Image (cartoon, rainbow, N blue to C red):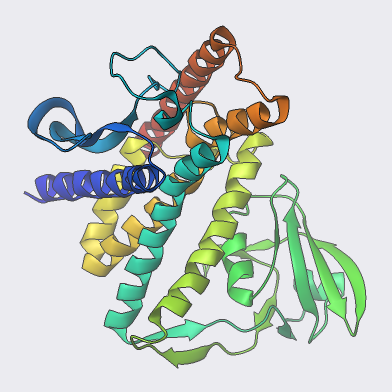
Length: 357
């Protein structure tokens, strides 16, 4: 019974996140007078449909996402379409700035969903913790930080790992979160000490009690903030902003050839969902917010089959002032689909290996 419940919640989560993403494309397309053939919730065989003035609205059998179908778009490649629609109302015939807004709208809606869910979590709890600035309050003796010469009141401006991950810090919480992706090697800190910028390199050590790598510094106290309807979205935005920075850092790392061991496919996400459900409803809602951000931002990766790749192609067309030849676009799309499938197979293989281990 528990497995069935988890599966249902897993499918609800994926369908909700994808539908919100596609809804972003749909709404902006409608606002910009771009023709939408179909808006579907779910995939596979059609269960229910209703024809609007222009758009066909459908619910399909498999609760695995959804899609927003445009005239002149077939698997991301412009194709002939039997509908008699003016060229300037098609996705590829509309002005390029309209296409860019439509493509960006999916990720925007994923971010909006995450902010809304986190705000509701904060509102239900009634309080949150506000992280202090990334300023060191204490350096523990005989630790990597102490041996590297870090001092009280050093302001940590940026932290970088050997594997290419790097992030500029706004608060101490971002530093703690960033250290969660640390595996091995040195880290480099850019610090401000009384107005003078310094660079410090050190190697974290594993702390068995905390089950994490540490360098031996402490922050100033976190402050407790009472949450109400007037400030819940403000602190939700701050939290989501921190998450966005970490996700973008991880995505950039993938293109540098690092971080593939952190990838998860459907099996891994299902396993995480099972854990989240066991912890309670709020943890499950927080997972939806986190995955919404991940899916939205990954969609902006410059892979042609994703929104990000289509955005890059659109920008190139704006620069060269003509459409990329259809055959070239098709070849790029096929190659990117193959790459994406291989990536999913790799991630799923990792998930299964972790489960067996």
